[in-house]
Image (cartoon, rainbow, N blue to C red; front, side, top):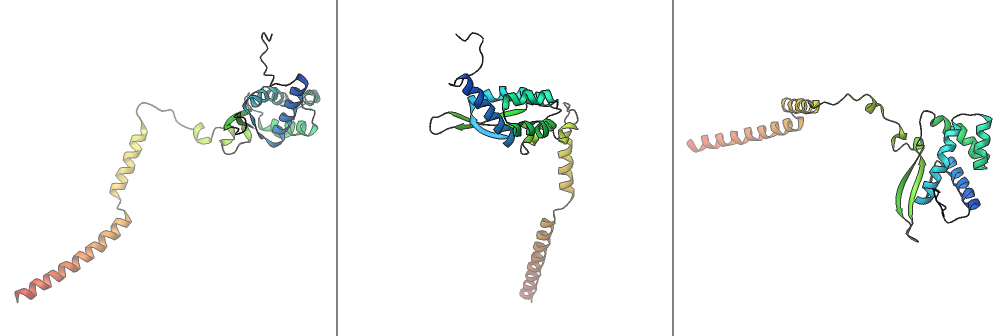
Length: 189
């Protein structure tokens, strides 16, 4: 019975599961993003988050503890040099899991697991400067005032394209009017 046993065994023996988690964690540390099944990614997140927290304090003891889990000195070096400096101010939640659909062969849910601070497309996990300096919103929205100002300036300032079109039509209208008056005068005489 598995009373209180919350780990997902992933259909593997204990030694196989530990080796697989170590290999997946090493791959994630080196390449910053890997694609795997959702169940493995959730298990990997529980495996790697404590290691990243441990890497924040760069000591020989911490390195040895992390090495006992990963068994890869290149991954340990990368974790303590690059990743630890980038996540130093983050209190937790170092990785994110993004679902990518299902695998065609066996319909397994696939996902991408990546380090939050290493994705430039999603803002690198940092709050942008605009959001930090945003003013508190009130019920009286200032956005309406700004749009009114924009509309007023749009009404007050003539559009250069419309001005050119208006001047051309005025010239055409003047020439038509001149020709009409000339025909009117010619018919009168």
